[in-house]
Amino acid sequence: MTRYAYVAAKPDGSTKRGTTRAESREEAELALYERELRNIRLSEKPGLLQLEITARRVKREEVMHLTRQLGAFVGAGLPLTESVHSLGREAENSSVRRMMLEVEDGLRDGERLSDCFDRHPRIFPEFYRGILRSAELSGRLDTALGQLARYLERDLEARRRIKQATIYPAVVAAMSVVTLVVLAGFVLPRFQAFFDSLGARLPLPTRILLAITNFLTGWWWALMIGLGVLTLLLVYVLSTTPGRYLRDRLVLAVPVIGPTVQFALVERFCRILSSMVSAGVQLPQALRVATGSLPNRVYRRSLAGVMEAMLQGEGLARPLAATKLFPATAAQMIRVGEDTGTMDAQLEVTAQYYEGELDYKLKKLIGLFEPAVIVLMGGVVGFVAIALVSAMYGIFRQVQG
Image 1 (tube, rainbow, N blue to C red):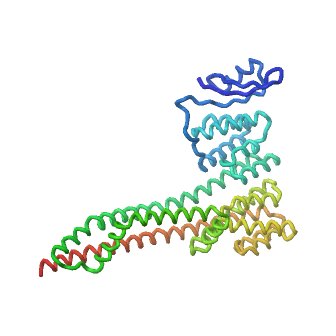
Image 2 (cartoon, helix red, strand yellow):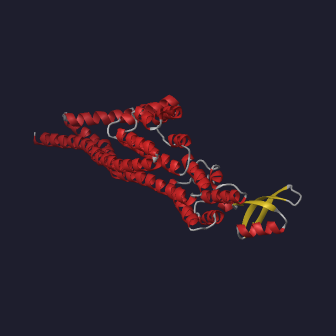
Image 3 (cartoon, helix red, strand yellow):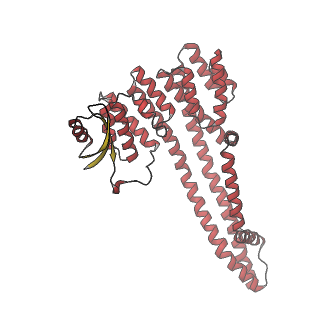
């Protein structure tokens, strides 16, 4: 049997707290109801063997699946409370299960779904909750949940492609480092000892490699201290607002990577803004939430100025173009939406366009990244091979001589 903690109202209006045991949540509520308790709120109390040292993190993929299933249930006509109850009961992640039980309690007390999700900002971002809040007012909750699920899926797919692209170069780099350590740490010193016994001098490539390995071996502690100090300094700088702003600006200035990040930010901004405007959110509020969803502080600062210009009656397209952070095509599409009164549709078209452009940029970036790593590690391994071959050839000549 499961143990539940409860808070309920007694017949005289006072609050009663306690614990009870039951086979299920429904049986626990029924037993408390028969004891003339009302406004019952339950929370499952795990046993000693079920206790977790730390709460399990809720992954973005789990949020996506939860959103899609909840939208399907609501679209099929299932009551929202029953839908939340079913999803919470079937959730494998204990954090999701507890969160959905809290949401269910809130819904039973008359709260809206967005209000319940507001208590879990680490799981549901602000734009997610803002879209839900507007959808509840317009009665299009199932549509909004479907849109959110598709957006989360696209975001996860982009991250998955980047991770997959880095696996092969990372494996090549790791194997190359292991090879270098073995050759430079164990093989080359033996060549050096042998040459010293012959009174001969090692070839130049071998001497260079040995000097590097001897330096790393003798001064590794100083290098570790220096690396630690540099890391602490970097962490401190990035903990400040100017430091994070400088980092984001440098990322945008890096060739190939910068344009890819720019297209990703434009696509995300247009997608979230479109979803919120189509859900009935007022444009100033939608712009504020869409701006807050961007991780780049250069864009956030510039879009704060766009908000002020828009509130002064300048519209949205012209201030966006003035930031120089949005391509001219994006500003032109948004201007068409302003002129024709189809802002949500034009924002969706813009998001779809830059989604395709982002896919092309990602493929180009991945196509350059893999050979760059392979060429770099190949050059290092090749230099080590030359150093070894030179040493072996030197030994051969010593023996022949």
